[in-house]
Image (cartoon, rainbow, N blue to C red; front, side):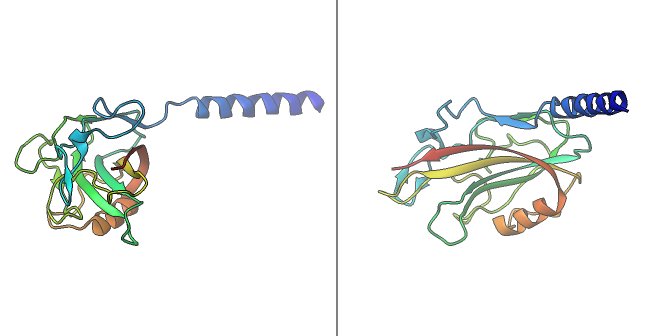
Length: 185
């Protein structure tokens, strides 16, 4: 009996190890420094800020099985609004894509994959809006999230608010990978 219990414990440990050894879904960026502080290139141009307003390069790996598309969001939970601040939402990125280039958030360019749709940010337009916390405030956090989705397409257009995009993402998410950066002025 003791031998069976020992064998069962060994089998369970092996199964647990093999499940936990699977590589995690993750996100990285060549444009965001290792200290995760945004550069002037990712700072908004307006509202008292004078940055480049360029979205960073993003890449992701090890998506979960069943991923049919991706979405990207950039959100500031520290904005003094009571509801945070949506800096960027992009949906309907095909499942065979695993990176987007620097500047893909510029709605005047075609750097995003065919079929991808950018929603409206809280600055009021479709595309990337960089960091711009109030002067003198503590540095804000900017959550760059890649969402692995169970659907190949969300019914989103360029007028969709961050809240609507967030609702649709949470209804279809399989997994998320997040990189949090900061910026203060």
